[in-house]
Amino acid sequence: MSDSGPGLPRPGRSMRERTSTLLTGALGSAILMIVLVAVMWAIEIVDYMEGGRLDRYGIVAHEPDGLPGILFAPFLHAGFAHLMANSVPLLILGFVAAIRGIGRFLAASLVIILVSGLGVWFTSAPNTLTIGASGLVFGYFGYVVARGLFDRRTLDIVLGVVVAVLYYSILWGALPTQPGVSWQGHLFGLIGGVIAAWLLRRRRT
Image 1 (cartoon, rainbow, N blue to C red):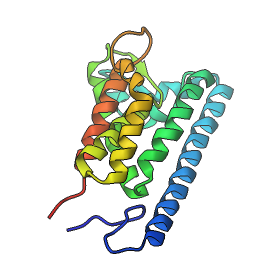
Image 2 (cartoon, one colour; image 1 turned 135 degrees about the vertical axis):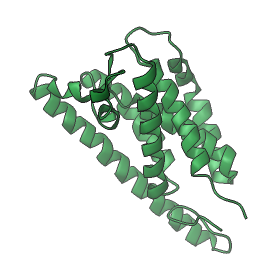
Image 3 (cartoon, rainbow, N blue to C red; image 1 turned 90 degrees about the vertical axis):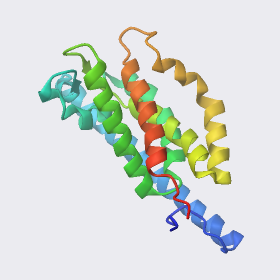
Image 4 (cartoon, one colour; image 1 turned 60 degrees about the vertical axis):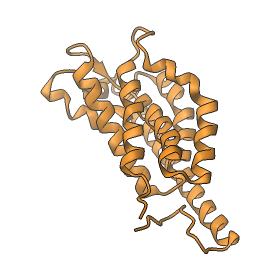
């Protein structure tokens, strides 16, 4: 059984075909991430005009009514500075995560959102409200690095090493060192990324 798809070069294909496929995957992932971040900015503009009322749809820890916030929280932010801080790493890490195929990327994103969100809901202080895309940022970091380990494809290994070298410092954010910052979202986002890489790994026959 093989897992071919957009952005996944198959044995026997010419270098030109592989390059074309990779470039197509890169273009698709770039467009996807630009649209995703643009949506977040549009939501934050609406939230600003509404006086921050949308933020209440984030994750409220230990409250059953706060569970739907697991799906909404990544798209909500506590102001434009918060969103700006997440936008650049989200664009870069999301682009690298999506370059191997949009389908796998969307599946990985869902796993990351669920693992990160549930981790926040269970482990944060009761009634704590958590919003922001940083769980996705940490999740894509973990996904890209772990994908190289699990799939063992040359390109994935190279991408994983490059991302690990450039962004290793964000791992400090998964520790409870900064008040007011959801280290739980960071930690469980990272765990969700590794789980997604394992679940979506290339099956070998």
